[in-house]
Structures are given as C-alpha cells and as structure tokens.
Length: 144
Image 1 (cartoon, one colour):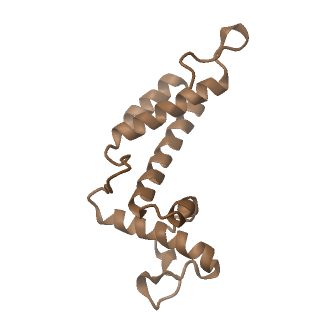
Image 2: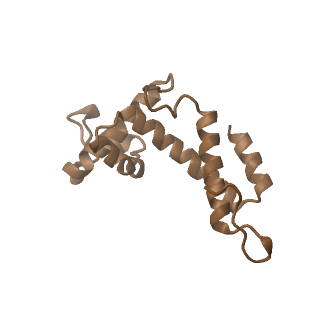
C-alpha cells in the first residue's frame, strides 16, 4: 500500500487508493477490537456455547457440500431426524467460503474466527462506501 494515496485529476484521491486505505483500516480496527480472535498460533474462541455450534455448522457445510449436497440439510446433530440443519441458520455461504480452509486442514476454530473477522471487515467497508467518511467512522466506533 502506498504511503501517500494516488491523486487523480485535480488532486483528488483515486477510488482504488481510497478503497485500499479503507480496507487496511477496516482490517486493523477489526483485529484490534476483537483481539485475540485474530491470532494465528493459538486457538481462541469466545466463552459461549453458541460458538461451538457455529463452528460445527461451518464444518458440517464444508464437509457435506462436496460429499453429498442433496443431503446437506440432513445434518447429523439430531440423527436420525431429517432436515435438522434447517432448525437453525444454516450458514451456507459462510460454510462454502470456509470450505478451502477446512480442506487444507486449518483448525475449525481459526476458520470460524477469520470468517467472523471477514464479516466485520466487509460490514465496515460497506458502511465506508455507502456513507460519508465521518459517518462511517462513527459507525465503526459504535460497532466496536
């Protein structure tokens, strides 16, 4: 990332430089405000039973989607009942995004944490792109 943003016509900052700065700031703020979830070496999960359930859902979708997608919702949590993944939010998109990391052998807790951070960063970026800079910063502050 350049130290000084690129300037286009009339000395205005180009959109690509603005988005690069916004992305870097969003990542830094998300990691800082949710520390220690951004750690790579240790597995850190929040003290909540819901986190374990979320990790299981991510792992189930990543396991079942390439194996047998027709039975994706027949999760083994209440076996032999059918359609049990539909009893909660299925996290299909997030599970699909985590699929390559699960296949690579990354710890499910780390995959969960990084996908959660990615969700925070994408929300911050959307606020930054759709709002003025001062309103976006206040939204960041309100979220944190």
